[in-house]
Length: 498
Image (cartoon, rainbow, N blue to C red; front, side, top):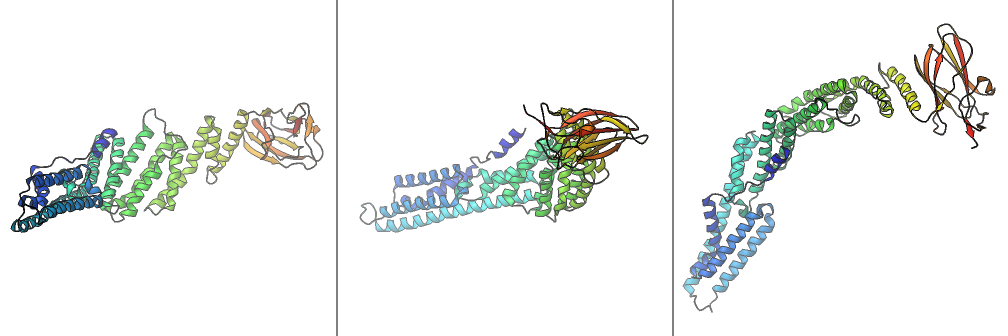
């Protein structure tokens, strides 16, 4: 549907025009040759008239009105050629020319040129009048009435008058045809066709009238509404998953269109509707987030950026979207975590730093890091040694860092958390035939640093890795920690000599 609409819009409606315009063209073409007729030089008259008519036909074919300076020079050059030929024919030594005839020929030639110029000027005025009527109808929103006038201006051979009217009429007609196509698509429920049609209508209208006309506000509002309808249909189509979760839904472009209504036509009725239209975007984003949290997250983030614009009502919409974002980001992170897409989950959760979902996001981030480490090439972490007792209903972990690198301990289970153990300045990397991380608590040196973590009893996924160092291989394990028991584990960094 788009291809058909576009092709139709780009075709020129210029035709042969009515007979009286051709008659006028013939008279204007023949008029500059009147001096030859007065001299009885029929062959010269026919050659000059046909040459002028050919020049006019070429001007019509090549749309001379789009380059009036070039064609004015060509017209002037042809007029000079005709004058030179006429003067040469009027020289005294010419055997067939007498003085009275010469005077009559000069008068005829002068009147002929005056008639040609007057005819050109008359046709230009007629075209301008028709164009003015067409523009007035389009600016009033009546494209059905405007199109016949535009077609008339294009189809009456006005190009040979070097008038800018045909080119302007062509652009105006494009805008009207696309406007009508957009209105028809909206009535038939074809949002995508409406979007494309209004896109062209807005562009052609701006080319013809600029960006300050109130009628443009209505076209832009229709374009923005069509884009919203298209995106809404894509987001809710059966079996259709919205575009990649980290891509913008298209709010930026839609908001830019709505914003241009306010900036270019602030006094228009459509400018007063912009704030409500933007709030609809937020409602749609929340509806999308209910089914596809990550897609809704990107759309809400676009709306938050509205707070920096001067669009009426935008700041209030941005504040509401900002309040919605943490919940949607957390939900997106949870969805990505469940799908095993840990990098995307981490990106969403790290943005949740304030509000009631901040704690949940921090806990889930730990679970993401633990799961990500287990998914990778981590080593197997041995279980801790039961070393003593802990208060009833709790379990304790005493973890020692016997290395010169800071270590990070992450745990996910009945509780989620992360702890960092400072490096031991007097401890060194051990060289072993193999390189397991971890060992018996009693194998640690006296200068090693230790921490005690008190947890709820249960099964925990544990990760031990270098804090900020990619050189230390992470190790993971699943630890079952009993109530009332204290566990201990010593970690050191080892390197293999093989």
